[in-house]
Amino acid sequence: MSSTELPETRTAAAPPASRSRAVRVADGEELRSVTLPGLSLNVRARPGDRPGLPSALYVHGLGGSSQNWSALMPLLADLVDGEAVDLPGFGVSPPPADGNYSVTGHARAVIRLLDSERRGPVHLFGNSLGGAVATRVAAVRPDLVRTLTLISPALPELRAQRSAWPTALLALPGVSSSFARLTRGWTAE
Picture (tube, rainbow, N blue to C red):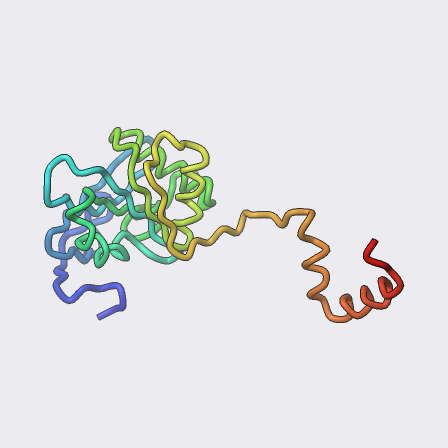
C-alpha cells in the first residue's frame, strides 16, 4: 500500500479517457471525466453530507493526483462539497493538448474547469505545485475563489525584490566581514 492509499480504497475502472489503468476510489468518492476543447480532466468528488454546501476544489502537487486529497475530503465533507482534480498529465488526466505543463497552463486548466461547471466561487485548496496553481488562479480570477488554503505551496515564480538583495548578499562568505571593514568608521548619523 502506498502512502497515498487509504485502507478502505477499492479499485474502479478509470474514466473513459484512460481505461488502460485502474484508479483507486475511497468509499464515498465518485470519479468522472470532464472533457473540454483540447483538455480532459479527471475529477474525484466527495459530495457533502448536506445539500447546498459551498464548493471546494483541491489541487495536488507535483507528481501527485486527486487521490492525495482522499484522506482530507471526508474530514471536511460536513463543511464543503469537495472535488479534487487531476491536473493535465497527472493521475489519469491525459497530457494537455498544447503540451503546456507550466503553472500558468495548469491554472488555465483549473479556471476552465471551474468556468465550465459554473462552480465558483470555491474554497480552493492547493498543495506544493497545486499551491502555486491555486495562487495563480486566485490572482487572475478572484471571482472564482471564496477562500484560498495553501499547504506547503511551491511558489517558484516569485522573484527576489531589489530591496532584499543587499541582505541576501550578506549571506555570501566574506561579504559581511568586508562590509564590516568598509563601514567601520561610519557613525549612526
